[in-house]
Length: 118
Picture 1 (tube, one colour):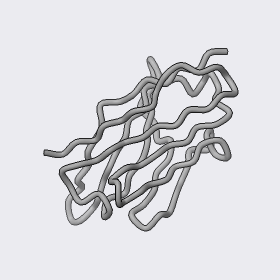
Picture 2 (cartoon, one colour):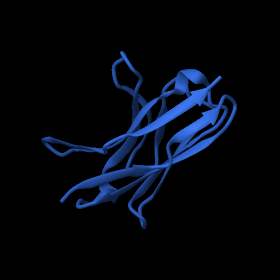
Picture 3 (cartoon, one colour):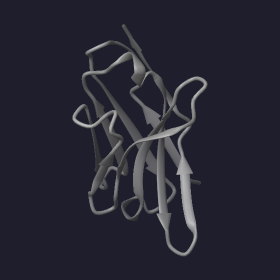
């Protein structure tokens, strides 16, 4: 059974930091690209950051230089370190794993709330 379980969300003041984790199971994590998406109330889900199976990273412009994505294949876990948080970072953050091999296989976590107060 495939599972992605996020943890680490919460309430923080603007300028603070939070670290999210996503533990994966039920599939070969190391060969999947993994990423973090977020969805604020009334808005579409958007990409925050992605890390490929070989460690390449890409970030949304809005979080560059503030957020860092990393992964530990030995622990089947992807992380998102969020610094200098802003109220506009408030959203539900979702973990994603995906791989294209003729067909797209994509898995999602249940989401974790991040709230940044001003």
